[in-house]
Length: 345
Image (spheres, rainbow, N blue to C red):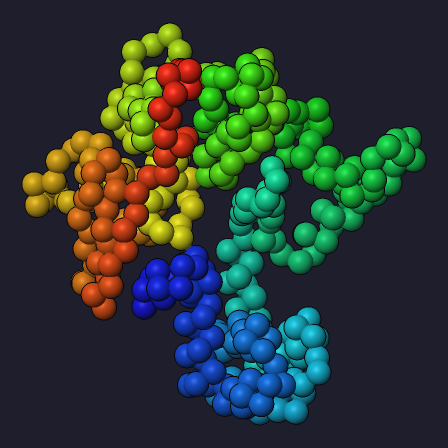
């Protein structure tokens, strides 16, 4: 159901999951919160805060919390509502709260979310006291640096210290990672200013692509595209070797999971057959594409199917009978001018 909602409303799987989960909880377990939503005392976003903090409690506790919240939701901001719900959950279920806290502390992790204009958010889901200690330590170091370097703000110092501590033990590291950037040859040499593409992120400005490419530790690969369609034809391992394998071509062509609304980078996805090999599906660039593990497993669920349309494209059919067509994005707009048909790097 979550996957169908995601496709129907063109939202991410996480957003669709939140919509479905909130709706089910309001109807089945949180009647007073639903009534507040109906009256306009709160909106759906505020209602989701009640759901999120009661999702793991028994039905009886959820009923107690919901009843306690009656009359306490109107004219309050989401943060205040969240605080009241957390208080009520601990009040009515102290032992359960402690058990759930232990389980969640075991689920600590870090996550990466790409933002606009060449920025991303790297966050850590950590126990509160550890996260607070890390932030306090970086803040102390940032204030010390700020006393000597007034050109950077306290936030900038704090962010730079965060990056340095993660990149190298001695605090003087540089970003070293394997990333895929597609950039036209003419843009690379500065003759054109078209945006480049960073796999898993999207368009980046020409100046950033040249900055990445000019780093002494960067390596280049040759990508040959069809000038009429912008689709990838060959992907070299580097600019001196022969064309790469089929797997390299598919990863470079798709750049991310090809399920609509999913943007898991290709390096964290799997090469999947659109028509399974069990049904005599071919292993070629028309029938193979990138799918994250979750959407790869989804294909095995009853009612889900897909048919290839060529060059990694497919038509998805859901259990409700709806269809959705998807295809890899071209690397550039179609070109008909002979002067535009230059190699790409």
